[in-house]
Image 1 (cartoon, helix red, strand yellow):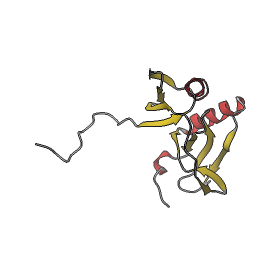
Image 2 (image 1 turned 30 degrees about the vertical axis):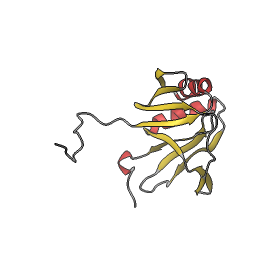
Image 3 (image 1 turned 30 degrees about the horizontal axis):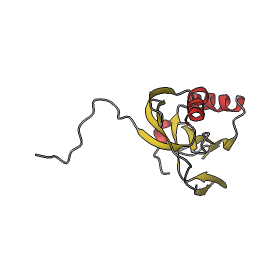
Length: 148
């Protein structure tokens, strides 16, 4: 009958995230022109994006819920946010492209845990609806889950 084991995938699983937006046209422009995503399926109330090989779906809503923040390194990090971990060079290229576009950063690009296990570059910005996005990179990708 049934089994408790998940099916075995022959390739790396893809991540899917659905999130709320208040303006589909501005969201499309932001994710395509600024971030570099491709557009997938669309509808009058949602858009699928290829977000660095993963599927994210922007759903149109009248307003976003109130945001909570969490203090990290003396900065207010949006508790609800999403993003991607890029290769070190790709992260720097994105940070440079965002700076050149005069993007207003929620948290300016910087390096955390410099010289320590888990050394990482990070930056935060908002999409046109106010959703928090974090882009980060680990100098050594093998330390993504290192605790000490």
